Image 1 (tube, rainbow, N blue to C red):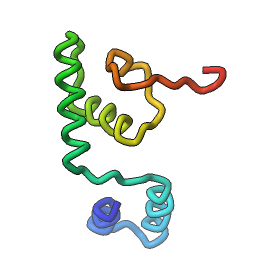
Image 2 (cartoon, one colour):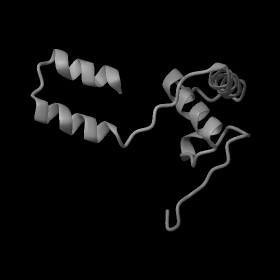
Image 3 (cartoon, rainbow, N blue to C red):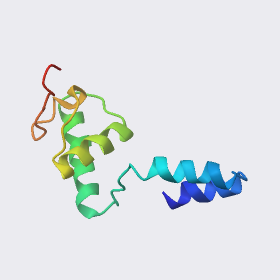
Length: 91
């Protein structure tokens, strides 16, 4: 998130606009890339290709992140065996 704030500085954002940006970004978590996440990404890509399901690199990162975090996941990834699909009540 620091790079977004630096970009805001370079764009000559006012102090109040930078504060709003920092407050907005505070709600987000940053997951650092590591060997496990990268390996999971490769597994997602390989499984998708093997099953004839085209998946973009970006969508594979999302799926890998969901797997690493054991997070609820969207139906776009239901072809992946290890990803358990969880639907919100009423959804």
